[in-house]
Length: 133
Image 1 (tube, one colour):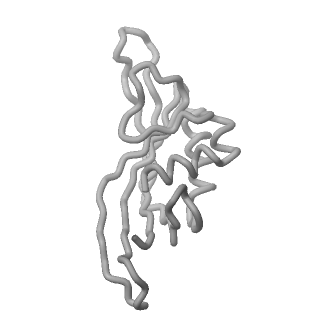
Image 2 (image 1 turned 90 degrees about the horizontal axis):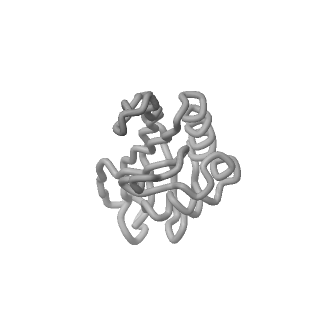
């Protein structure tokens, strides 16, 4: 599903206008250009379907970190991702998503690691993706 989310976000015009194809899984390269998105799976739950469909219903919790060198740019990227993905259903790469539910949103600031004055602003979107396996 992580690869499906990468496909989904890089294919969305508003998101890609802000961060191009810089959507990563688990971590960005050390010298990644900002702004960018990092998708991290936080947990999952698998359940039997009640309608008799084959497969299982899976719920996966993700954090989507929208990172930028300014709070305004991080917020703009997060807004673009949220507006697009909240309540999304449909194709995501080779997966078919039944629903995306937004759970939470938070802001953070990562202090500089290189001795400069410029840290990284982060807006984290916490969401759950529902799909049949």
